[in-house]
Amino acid sequence: MDDKLRAFGKNIDLLINKNNLSREESREMFRQILMNEQPDLQQGAFLAAITAKGATPQEIAGGWEVIFDLDTVKVSPKISVPVVENCGTGMDSFKTFNISTAASIIAAADGVPMAKHGARAITSKCGTIDLLESIGIDVECDASIVKKSIEDANIGMFNGMSSKVHPCALGRILSQIRFGTILNIAASLANPASPTIGVRGVYNEKMIMPTLETMKEIGFKKAMVFHGKNSNGKCGMDEISTSGLTFVAEMKSDGTITEYTIDPSSLDIRCDNENDILASERSNESIRFLRLLEGKESRDREDIVCLNAAAILYVSDRVKDIESGFERAKSIVASGRAASKIKEWVSIQNSEPDLGLEKLDALLCHC
Image (cartoon, rainbow, N blue to C red):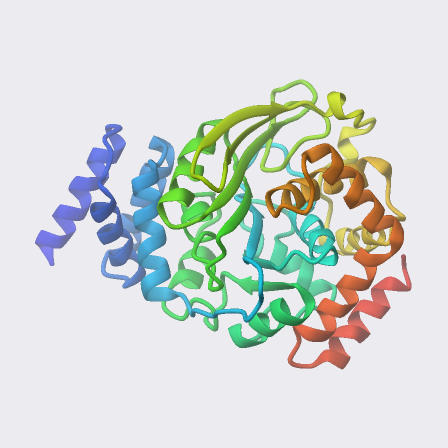
């Protein structure tokens, strides 16, 4: 045991001194954490050191590999088109409301099969799981129910902190930390449905390429990774921004990678009240989330969701570019299809549909 402690500590020293681990070394260290073979102090020190250094694609892939192999229930939705994922890593400095989940619902309403994989709040006020639970989605259900929801409703949510999805240790680790680590990337990539198309926001511009290269390494066929800035450029968000530039790396189906920026002004999009896209308390966010899907929220909130939905529609080949994707997303909200999709989702991803719909209807009364 002493030898294992020393070897683990030696690798932590390497990370502190800005040295990189191989994929195999990273996998072994994450394995020891998942198996709880190291003291809590060593586990926390490793996660802090590798995050502070800035993880390489090989290090992230090593973490993903062991989580997916040893601690993820696998499902294979029976659908005719590729499964798509969309999420943000969290840990960003500009704490927006839950944009990616609303964007996923809009995409699902247009026929894109979305396999979401998220967690409860760690660095934010209201995590994806917290929000969906509050509106009636059964976030503690078996992975088989999520699979059926992807098949029947075009969208499902796997709870990254549930033992029914990650039965070994992931929930234990995430529940004990209150700071962001590369687990936000590695663990979120361990999606039970093995999507091959991904749209992902990251907490730092420097993590765009490592994340995209990781996705390529672990089998994604098409992907877009981005980091947006607020109006003065001082804060960042794990979303496409409507108030500042967004830095993007995109992997095409042939494996080529291109980098570019999205300027909302070039799309004739402006954010008049930047504070309006910041997150508030969970009870308030639930109502505003539903209002948005019904087309009753502020233009600033609707625009940023539709711009992020545009990225999903574009990468999924539903539209030819981001601009046309934005217009399509706006029309989906205006038509009522997004609002209908959330009701359908609640009724299908639920071990007790009547209770879920009752909770949703109670909130809708306040909308």
